[in-house]
Amino acid sequence: MGGMTYTMIETSSLSTAELYGQVLCDLAEIHPDIVGLSADLAKSTKIGMFGDKYPHRFFNVGIAEQNMFGIAAGMAKSGLVPFASTFAIFTSMRGLDQVHTDICYQNLNVKMIGTHAGLSFGQAGSTHHCTEDISIMRTMANCKVIVPADGMETANAVQAAYETPGPVYIRINRGFDQRLYPNTGYGFEIGKAVELTEGTDVTVIACGSCVFQAVEAAKILDSVDGIKVMVLDMHTIKPIDREAVLKAVHETRRIITVEDHSIIGGLGSAVAEVMAESGKACAFMRLGIPDIFSIIGLHEDLMAHYKIDTNGIVENVRSLMGRDFEADENWDDEV
Amino acid sequence: MVINNQELLLLEDKAHELRNLCVDTVMWAGAGHIGGALSSMDIFTILYYKYLKIDPKRPDWPDRDRFILSKGHVGVGYAPVLADKGYFDKELLKEYNHTGSSLGMHLDSAKVPGVDASTGSLGHGLPMAIGMALAARLQNKQYTTYCLLGDGECDEGSVWEAAMSASHFNVTNLVTIIDRNKCMIDGPTEDVMKLEPFADKWRAFGFIVKEVDGHSFTQLSEAIDYALAEKSAPVAIIANTVKGCGIDFMEGDYRWHYGGLDSEKIEQCRESLGRYYEKRCKEV
Image 1: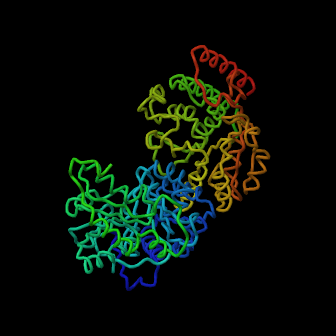
Image 2: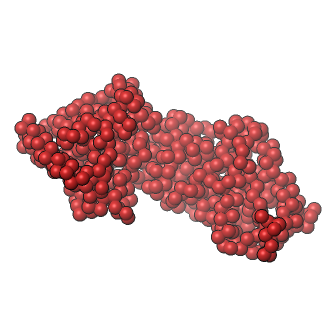
Image 3: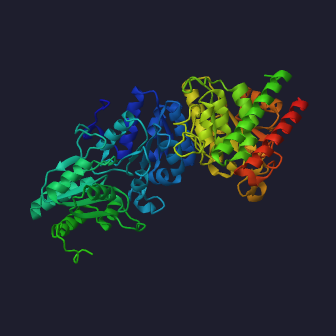
């Protein structure tokens, strides 16, 4: 790691995106090869903090995401390290051809920080919600996909992204996230899940804003039901931590994945792939946005609606506890 | 840089050689984007044999001029140029498009020395070229970035996003050339999606426009010299060209966007290219 450390006390007034802006400014002070780009979302994505400090290294291309990612690719080809920020939905969809061909195909050192991900832009609706990006971005060869759980993890992810050659996609939310980590010193490593609670009955594998909810759910399940939940912060969706998934299968025999994303193609799918290929299945459930376009509302209300909040996780863990993985030969009750 | 007659004849020789090598490559590949490759060949020739500051022995030389082939489908015309410059063995052209070959229809910058950016999906080259030009400005490097676009490609919105930003950031260490061969896959550009008034469009996006005969080395050279010297605004060179230039049965025919050549056709190509070369040399 780059040696920069942050604590919750110093940064308590900063939203997750503001912390990204702050970390980028700090990194840029040490690394003159960092440049910033945005597409008329400098203020919203907080990359504007970098732009204010380093105006000659910042390029706002207007509302033109394709051009932004193309320019970023050209800059990376010339040895610069561009951080390009727009909303997650415009990163993973509006500019995807450029992300695919210019950045990922050429394996360029571009860091794509998509904000307002999942349902965090609540009332903006499905034109601005982004529940497909994890699925899309993890199919881009060469691209790493990181979904930080809070501001501290975002600080770690941004630093790690700079230190990791090649394209990296970091997905963060709009506004404030519930704080999970008091500081950045908990051993963040790309591709390595963080085991937040120990448990032997069930594992909740979560990413992004759902990690905090999972930890809260684990507390309730322990105190009320006596269910011991292992919570994994699977901040890196690609490369997925296979070892952590298989350990969870082995030790708890029940897994629930929780993500502020479609249940198709995201964290749940990535975990299911590892499990299925290992040949060691277990009772399994994916929580996330079903195969629909979301309703509108406040982020926390939407998380409750789609049962990816604390109560939703508690309810589903209880339900899963009644389901055991069957290793029998009888298919009548499964087909 | 005024071109004298001796240099013009050398460029004519080179362009003739490259047109033939392009036909060979289409033959070895089985088929290829020959129409647009031949409309661009004089532009490739003047850039690679007169203007580009490059060193084929050091394809990653940080101070080299950059060339982005935004109309990436004409790799079948571009690869012969790179081979002739010595970036790789000409023998490799015989494997063009073959399974597992480093030379595919759209050249891959990770596999082909001398290719500054992988292109193929249209409308991508100019944004990347602008990124390289802005990087040169930030890094205090003196290199120039050249970008060659197709005219049909200019239907893509990203071309105009890029054009707007080249003007906004006053990117003048960039030379933008558009191969105006007036054809695209489904027909003439003006039938499929009208581009005219094309020069006015580039002007409206903040460019100074030079319209030239894209098969005249003298006119191309004058326009490139102008673009290199002009610092008040980016310059777009609209090179009026002929699709399939030099091969009589292809010239101006949009159906030769992509095609294969049997031995009879190959013979016709060579004869036609020979006549075309003689005609051009007489005009020098």
